[in-house]
Length: 189
Length: 189
Image 1 (cartoon, helix red, strand yellow):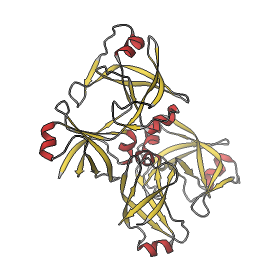
Image 2 (cartoon, chains in turn green, yellow; image 1 turned 60 degrees about the horizontal axis):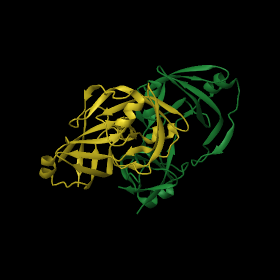
Image 3 (cartoon, helix red, strand yellow; image 1 turned 60 degrees about the vertical axis):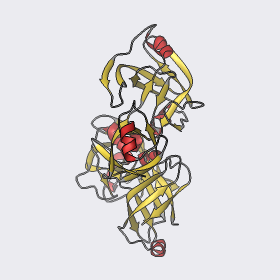
Image 4 (cartoon, chains in turn red, cyan; image 1 turned 135 degrees about the vertical axis):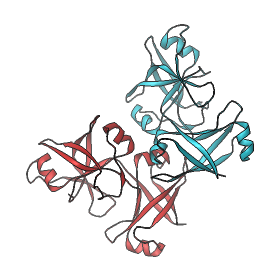
């Protein structure tokens, strides 16, 4: 039985260098307050407001370090609150995704695309992937045994030496599967 | 292949006669504005505010007719908003579930229990259950093919001549499985 730690990603933002300059001031450096499970990734002290056509969501977490393009990862629940039609996408695949406005203490940024609902996925370090016979981009199922036992199909495997072994789902998926606390999923190929 | 229509139940309330009297006035009759898929069940014009220890949710739908005990069905997302710890339960099984306050135009009702997260279930009319070889209380899986294909395990079957054949999930489950619009699930025994 192949088990993976299941982590829930709450809504968050990745910012480009340009966006940090506008939102927080030229040359501003984001403050790491917590290292995340993926090596080099961290939660920032700073927060921003995400503004949609319908409503805003305040104090949204920023995850560092900066990225090439700003990206807002939300749940369907959040997308409905904002009033945007966000597609289910892998991180980084933001072409023609939903627009929004970001508001920081020093300025505002309109992004024409970047709001996505993250496709559920498993990060594999290369050694674990080899051991389990998993290839990059492979699709698997993951069963979560809980008060609402659920099998997530169409889970994309991403393999890199830069990754730590963990599955990421969003808050809607977490709620649907009662994947609260420290919970492990069974990988079904 | 056995397919069932999957309907999403948004948050709603069933009220006792006593609660209607207090919230809307002695002898008040709830107004049917829409018949639901289950025979005799209807959405009401009236709304109430559900007050939790953390926040309130306004304009919550009431489903008629009245029931023996008031019951508030929410998602985990809503339960977190309200600040209550609601258990996953079958409808009617409210013993020791979460408390809340209901506020209507004429008064307020404190309920000491009644806030639940509805356990996903399928209503079967007896003929369909017989045809499919399903017994009351049987547990099945249901696969939803979508942009986020998901297999819901631990789905309870409820068989009665008073039911129409349909599966009910909550908004978190709908979002997790992209079960939007008219969607059918495959029943797996």
